[in-house]
Length: 213
Image 1 (tube, rainbow, N blue to C red):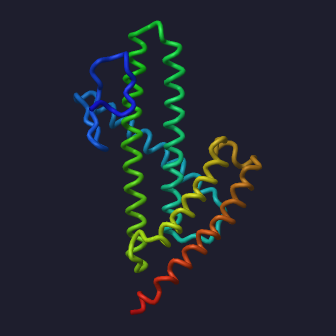
Image 2 (image 1 turned 90 degrees about the vertical axis):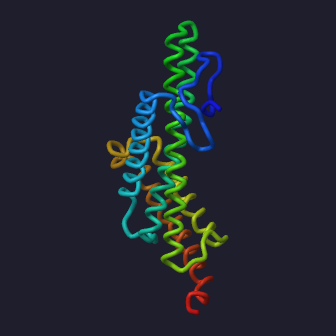
Image 3 (image 1 turned 135 degrees about the vertical axis):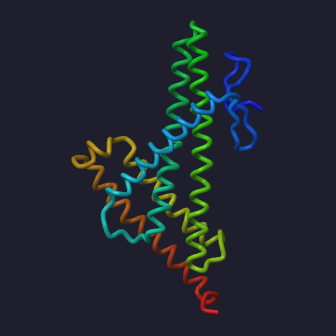
């Protein structure tokens, strides 16, 4: 099966084949291109998320493990937006290059590589989120991904979504210090971190008798 999202009409043979979440390049050159793009996207989105966490106000009602999950969810949201931007940009490029098939084929190649790399980064992030959750549950004697744990994790994800919505329109390194969005980020982080902490306390209290036994 060809890579998900394969655009028809440009090339008969796809650059990659897909088996479930595994992408299989057809040659060494394509493998290297996918790996470079994967590393580029992964580093870009993780660096952005880490910077958002770094500029949040100190003293939020979050544990170290919750900051780690917050960074992962921010990374996940940033990756999704970059993928949507890439897809929209590819459609614009296709419309401009419609008369030039060789250039259109090059654009198709790049879209396939970028799409596969995004899918791989997405799978990696989902695995990282599950692993971080499992470690938190193990360290706090929780039974795993039960409903209270899911509610707690959803609260962290919502915090990440709100922070991403505020932070994504600006250049954090150049514009944040003078932007009024800095205060909106701080207030949002403070209020929603309290909600995360409340769900954590409720979750831990629910399973406290089992821990005591």
